[in-house]
Each structure stands twice: as C-alpha cells, then as structure tokens.
Amino acid sequence: MTDHDSIREVRDADELREVLGPVAPAARDKVRDRLHELDRQWLARSPFCLVATSSADGRCDVSPKGDPPGFVLVLDETTVVLPERPGNRRADGFRNVLENPHVGLIFFIPGRGDTLRINGRARLLREALYFDRMRVQGHRPQLALEVVVEEVFHHCSKAFLRSDLWDPGTWAPELVPSRATIAGALERRHESPEELARYYGPGYGKDLY
Image 1 (cartoon, rainbow, N blue to C red):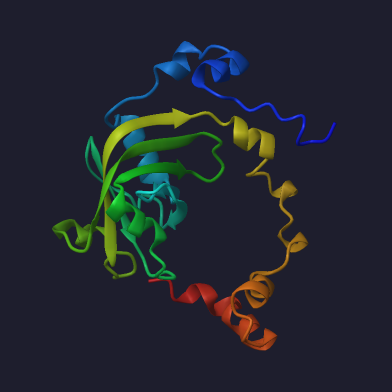
Image 2 (image 1 turned 45 degrees about the vertical axis):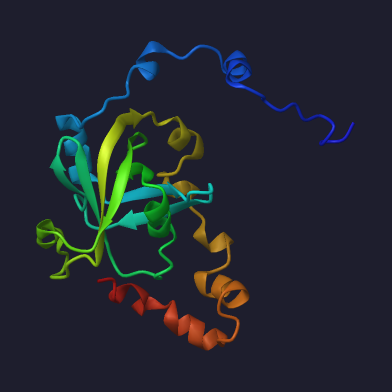
C-alpha cells in the first residue's frame, strides 16, 4: 500500500466530530462579540499580530503586523484599528479586504503561550482623526485597518508548549540560510552577494517608519 492509497479524507462535519470527540463546554462557549477589559489589557501589551484575509475567490493571505506594545488602537468595545507602516507595498491582504472584508487576527505577547483572537469585518482607511494617536517616532501610519469585532476569544497555549517557541534553547537561526542568501536565490538574483549583504546587514532595521 502506498501513502496515497492509505488516505481517508474527512467528508463532513459529522465525521470530523466523530474523529475529534465532543467539544468541552469551556471551549464551546468562550466566544464573545465584544471586548472585555481583560482583552483590552492584552492588546495594550501585544507588540505583534497576524492578519488573515481572503479574496472574493478564496485566495488567502496571512500578514504579520508589529510595532511597540499597544500599537493596536481600541476605539470601543467592538472596534480595533491596526496601523500600517512602510513595507514591500504588495498589499496582498489589503487587496483582499477590498474584495472581502472578513478578517482573522491573532495577537501575541512574547513569552506567553496563550493568544487573543479576533474575527470581524474590516475596512481600509487612508485618513482618520485618530491616525495622530498611532504615531511612532513621529510618523503617522500610511493606512489603517479598522476592524469591527464579531468574535473574540482567548486561545490556549498547547501549540506553543509543543513547539517550545519561546524557549531560547530551541532556537537555531543559523541552521537555515540567511535572509540575504534566500533573497539572492529566489527574489533578487540580479544582485551580487556583496550588495545583498549590505542591504540585509546591520542597517536593515534602521528605516522602519
């Protein structure tokens, strides 16, 4: 028997539940439709999140967003805003939002295994009075993603515990090619190793805003 011959695909929700078993009440009932004060405290300490989007025809994107802790602006119990900073200008996620406003957000705090998740409807803004409240190093955001909360809940730490993500003893960044090596092989083949080393060298993070 080959690997392909052994495949048994899950065909429907009933079969999925048969495999997984029943949902614990605490997990089943934890989803809320507005922010609690504890959620606000989490957002005030989170420096990083992932934004998941999908185009109208189902093409998906997940984009990282990061700034100093508390970079997410909480307007009220059902609205949060993520500032956009200079990047590669592909705008994959933003183009998705223009077609399909549904987004999923996961907020991280370094060292913590649990996360805060928000699902909602987003709109892309180029200006608002509150942009001034999201300045970093004197720079206003170029754009902002305003998200109306539809679902919010905390997610347990099992994935982080299994992966030892925050344990420095498991980190081995030197075991994979450097960013300059990857870019030279896949994205910037016309540039010399010296040019790439300069671009991705110590000065790379000095012009973030």
